[in-house]
Image (cartoon, rainbow, N blue to C red; front, side, top):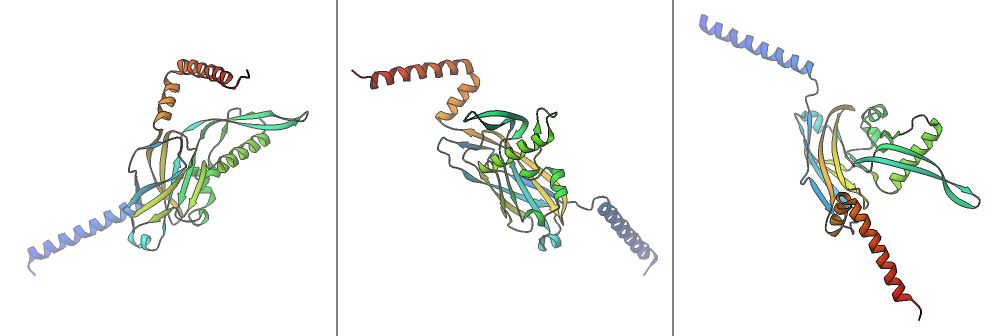
Length: 267
């Protein structure tokens, strides 16, 4: 080999070493390069008065996924659809003089009105409880903040548990184990449940990526759930023209009462 050829080979070898060192440094600096993407086929869902609930499908993909980890099923995804946050009042009834009346109440601020979640596997097989608490993942880990934090902690805990149970019983807080399925090594599909009484407003879909039990990345997208048809017009009128809507409701009640009196009066 001539001198120029040896010099060229040395330069190529040196370049390969530098590239390898840079790759190792980048891998050390960012050992988890994976990212997660989700997409909705539409950013609006219209519901009518006869809406009986439905399933919502969300598709997603992993970018820069390790093929070996993917083949071994060591990636997990949790997808959440979180409804708009509003204040919620929880009341407790007690029996007083033979009647059940509201004797105590607790107001919680910024409560998600609905919360639907789908996972690749059972919770304990994905990661530990501490990660779920830090990420506020799962209905039992949602932060329910009372308006008056000075109340008795035991009382607050009782009302918090009652609020969670009520949301679950009404179907607004639901989970679907195995609702996230990988269609390939990087593509997945999540199926979430929309309850019949799903609230209208802006919902947020969030996808969480885990690798070997370690949280890697999160991504989100927005979805608007709106009323359609006559219900939408009534809802819009109530929101935009509250005073006139109230007058119309009172007038309709008076008219209905008067008409009922004419129909059912005794001669």
